[in-house]
Amino acid sequence: MTPAAWTSWPSREALARETRTRARRVIAWSVRVGLLTLMLWGTFTGGLFGPWEIVVGLAGVLVCALLAVAFFRTSLENRLWPSLGLLGLLMLAAFGAGQMGASVPATVLWCGCAVTALERLPLSAGVPATAVALGAYAVVNTDDWVTSAVTTAGLCLAGYVLRLDAEARGSAQRLLAQERAARVAEAERAALDERSRIAREIHDVLAHSLSAQLVHLEAARLLIEREPAGEFRDQVLRRVVAARSMAREGLAETRQALSALRGEVSPVEDFLRQLVAAEPAEVRVEGERRALTAQASQAVRRVAQEALTNVRKHAPGARVQIRLEYQPDGVVLEVKDSGGRGPGGDLAGSGSGYGLLGMRERAELLGGALEAGPGEEGFVVSLRVPA
Image 1: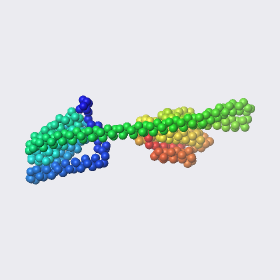
Image 2: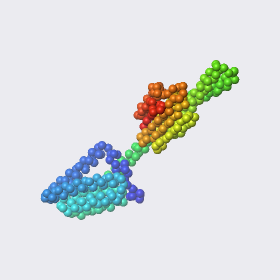
Image 3: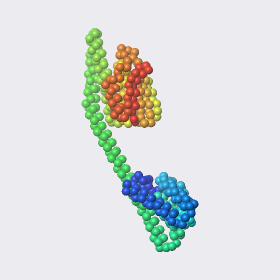
Image 4: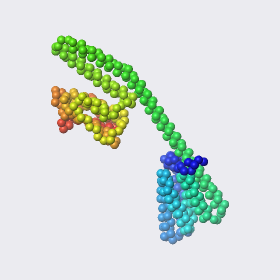
């Protein structure tokens, strides 16, 4: 046996009740109830006939039960000295019970201390504690030394077997947890590979198509600008420039979606600042910043884009304030404008648009909520999603 085996505690998986099967838990509770019943029976039949003696005996049984529960907790937390102190108090209670003539409770306490010390403590502390408990039991039980010797050997074997069984159970639980973690990692890897494949397909089809459109639209713009000025020429030029801007924005959003599929998403606050770089807008971030889940991050980005699109459409020239707040159990995005000052009017009547309706459905699927409506000055879009 290695030196580390003498100083190391049994693993938490070995000592915790959660790792036991239902049958093992039933057996453990049956043993405890049986021992408690035996102690109570011994208290009443051990020569304690006076009312005060019976009260003291019952109080002693209750105190011993509480000490045993405390010992199980401190040993589960690997606290050596408190565990040894509680074990010492239990042995002292066993000695007191023996002096009062309650030999059955004393025997139960001595034997219980011996087995649990060997099962739950490091061997360097459990073996001496077991030796003290069984030695005291052998000294008190002087009627038959053969019975005492056999009982002592059996208890030592029982304690060590229980320790080995608990360690085997703990090792099985650790292996099971590792296997589950490996399966989760494998599933995540497979999902990432599939997302990368989809990203490549989108890049090969949509991104190339948009890039080609940008080239042709830019060429068309240059050709139109060479024509003589006129109303028809100016209208066509405006349409081509607008189409080029839409293609450029679509290409930028496609690249962002590809980055999200590949897991290369920039922080949300950086995305918001880039989104309003050319806008009269202010971005304020509150709370402790942290990485968001992919679903929450995408929801915040899409709502911010849709809200800014509505501002450009219905309230051109309005000043926009964006507030991103990190909360303990979620994230809040608030986009509000100062009201329309241009021909597009304001956003007061746009809350039922299909864009915001889609964002509201996206938020509800994530367990969040989206509210859109008139504010003090202009229009307010507020999103909250768990993250």
